[in-house]
Length: 500
Image 1 (spheres, rainbow, N blue to C red):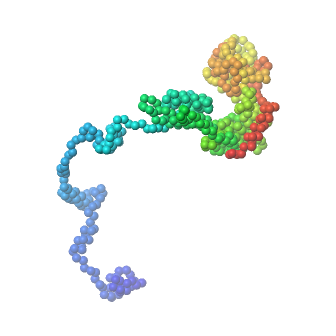
Image 2: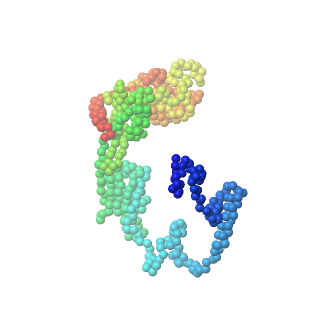
Image 3: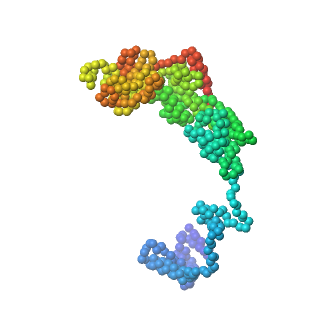
């Protein structure tokens, strides 16, 4: 190959021009001669004058760097002007009002809470006032507490007694004061007063008395007047459907069902089937919830009205009936299926959580020492454990009787009755109605007892029977006008659109 040098002469076969030139017999052009000054400059440029004093300690470069650093420090100290006080005039110290005026312009009052009470330094145009003027109106907000009254809330806010009582009287004409929910916010405006010795007059008052009603009180020439502001409310129920999936609770919550509604749904379904065994992931839940939507944008969720479960083999539809309006007559109240029938089951196999220590039948009495008929079950449980009613009934007796100690007898209808003895404390009274699962007393050892336990008896038509052989489920069917009203309600609920 051929290369061309700086003079334009072609060189062949290599990269060293001098060697190639001699090999081919061409003239050699010598380099430019360097002077001692150029050599000194190159030597100084190759020296590292500021090496890292933290490495290679003790080497020649390190000592050179130490000398350089010391020389720079010495030169800086020699060239510094030194520390000399500056002469100038010192203002005389301030005292009294002058000190307060100047301090009001400083930063320190901001940190100390402006304890001087001055907002800015005064000048010749500032005229001090004998007293600060009052604002013409004062806007306040009050909150109604639990068990509170309107007049007491207003007086605590600064309203005079006469205005507070007059306002409470006007509110009572529109709504029941006790029906106003705790936590209601009351906005009020107080007007100008004649002097500081009297309370400010109440000019306006505004609050939401009910979900569908707002009240405004304003002052006129004749006194306080009230204006009702009705609020339109849409009471269309909310219907939510979805698949059970891996978890009924989580799927319903993801669909927007409130937690309390899900609890009511599960309790309603548990009266007809087993949630863990009978409900599968492919099943669909169907809920209709009472809902009110105000024209102002607020929404209020009510109770669960319809609970449905769509399975491949059947549809379970339960409707709450008898808990509202004219449908409630004291005898019919609960969940009914689409045919108008309801079924109540016992809350558990025993009225108290424990173990059976003595069964129904003949046995040797532990205290009397001879064989006699044991007409119930003895259930051993810790002292004070709650005792639940196995099904609805009326308390026929609640008190102390013979060897039973503290004893409660329930009459359930259809010739069935049950008794609970040896209680430590009774939680019901004679003549009252109890519901399934309600606590009627607590485990004790009163009467002829050797330790804390519950003696449980069941009678059918006055004859004691084995409680373990009795089913406490009961079926109630609607008929006549109640059945027709129930059918109409079912039709209304099933006509609600999903999400509507």
